[in-house]
Length: 294
Ligand SMILES: C[S@@+](CC[C@H](N)C(=O)[O-])C[C@H]1O[C@@H](n2cnc3c(N)ncnc32)[C@H](O)[C@@H]1O
Image: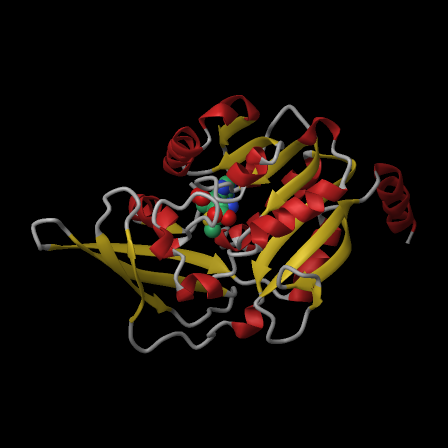
């Protein structure tokens, strides 16, 4: 197990309510003001715009760390054939429920695979891979993040494209919180109950890892409160560190922008949206030969 989660069942149970889909969220009230700041209201639209401009063989797209289908399901609904990979079988089970509840006619267009992307092994290559919404950060170790990028590279065609989306570290709170904060009150998509999520961010450590922990207080139908703790780790990545990692993993960075409308990256940008192309193997061979000569 390589993900940064503790109490992972809690994370799975609340995922769709914490990170609701604009396209199929059960409760529209979960798309509240805090949802606007989570960085997930425009990303799917962005992927659709990019994919629609590419000439993708058989419209096949690989989504790494696909979770419960927030990105993959609307893409499949737009005609893409999706291979989704996730380390947590519970996330994939919820993905299947979301698929059956919302897009039952798309069953044949989606394959779900339970694997750790740091040792990804699919007998197939793709023209486009998506590693969206901070998923790379949730592998809370530098070497494993690099390994994940190398594995993704190995699953792309010669000129294949990686689309990567992570938060901008400069807007994060490196010192951590002094007290837990209630961040929102929403409805649990499975139980229909109202819950409040409390969160506490730890100070960043020397490995650039933070613990994001807290608890959910859900009001049960009998009026009692059910408290469920959660904890996950992420490893923040800085722009030039990420660029060097992509280079090492065999990618050429095509662009780094912020937001979902190709704005230039600035220190206070919400996120870093990266397009990176797999470097051609011919070029990689020349580079290797040159580095041996020096
Ligand atoms: C922030 S969620 C993103 C889910 C989805 N892509 C979305 O945008 O809503 C991160 C997902 O990455 C998965 N994950 C974390 N580490 C992983 C790994 N090493 N291999 C595969 N999946 C992983 C988690 O289980 C989780 O579903």
